[in-house]
Structure formats: structure tokens, C-alpha cells
Length: 246
Image 1 (cartoon, rainbow, N blue to C red):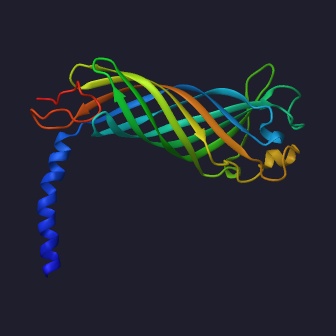
Image 2 (image 1 turned 90 degrees about the vertical axis):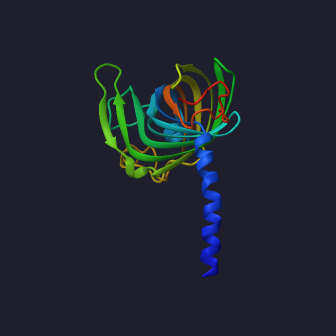
Image 3 (image 1 turned 60 degrees about the vertical axis):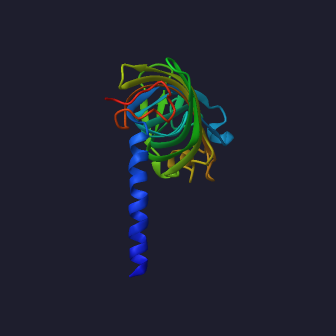
């Protein structure tokens, strides 16, 4: 009984502090997205002549300011990572290229540092965990329309992990909104391949599981709605120029 009494006393003491901290913090929620370039590289027999290809990401984000100029940011993005290679397959017409598309649901978890008042400058970094939704292989002939070759999702690991780092600028718009532009790089640290695909087997490209890693660079534009705090409380987190809504 005494243990329950102590627990409730601690809860009564801590809860007001938690509420006050939530009131004083700056929160934001928004959307962000943009184009980029990506590359899949690895085993020479599959990715030996890989070239960057257009890619992109888009999704939602949330941010919490936990200290002066520092905040934690998380996102949930649909992201496409692509690469183009030469076509070595005898199953396809000579020439042309192969294009690998990986579609991921990505969760970047970042720590962000911001400086400035009217025009803000920021850097952020952290891990990014991605869940593979599907992989598709396309044939790009020298003339004519592209052709879908295969869906090879089963030849890839479902989870990828990247180290993410970015820098950008942000501009407060009115009292509530913040628009931003960021250059972000996602450097994959895990091997994404689990097996050689049926197409790679029949094309004599690979028998053993090839190795592959991802890298993507994105130009992300975003808009966020900022809220939090009670009337009159100073702004404690990453933007000293922002005042809470009245």
C-alpha cells in the first residue's frame, strides 16, 4: 500500500512539470518533399556500371523543440530510390539500359540545430529507417517506350538503414507558418540484397546474392505549422524570434 501511495505522490509532483514543459515547448507539424538523385552501387556483376537516376521523397514531418536552438524532428516519407545500369542481359534486345526502382516508406529521426532570427539557418542529422514496399526493374531501350521487366521485391531485404544529414534555410511566414528548403543526403549503411533475382539468374548476371547499397540526395521544400505554449511564455527552443500564439 505504501508503494502505491509513494507512486501517486511522485506522479502528482511530476505531472505539473510535464504539463508546464509541454506548454513552454514549440511544436510543429508539416509536409515536405522534393526531387533528388540516387544511386545503387555494389557488386560489379549487377551494379558495376551504375549511374545516378532521378528520385524523390514526400511526406509529413513533426518537430519538437527541447532546448534553445535544438529540436528533434521525425518524418514519414514515401521515397523512391533509383539507379540506371548498362543492359547485359541476353533476354532483352541489345543495347539500352536497365533501371532499378526501390519504393520505400522511410522514417528519418533527426536532431536539428537552428540559428538566426528573420532568416533561419539549420543543420540536422540522424538515422533513417526504411521499409521496402516494392522493387521493380525496367528496360529502357535506345528507342521506344520503357518496358517493365520484373518485380524483384523478394530479392531485397525489407529493411534498410541510412545515415541522414542535411542543411537548409527556413523563413517564418506570419505568426504560425514556417517555409523551408533543405539539401539532405541519405547514405545507406546496410546491404539491401538478400538473394539474386530470377532475372539475374536467367541472364547469368548473378548466382550468389549480390551486394548493394543506396545513396540519395534530396532537395526538400517544406511548410510547417508551429504551435505550443501558453500566452506570454517565452520561446525556449530552436527559434528565439518566434512568439507563441495569443
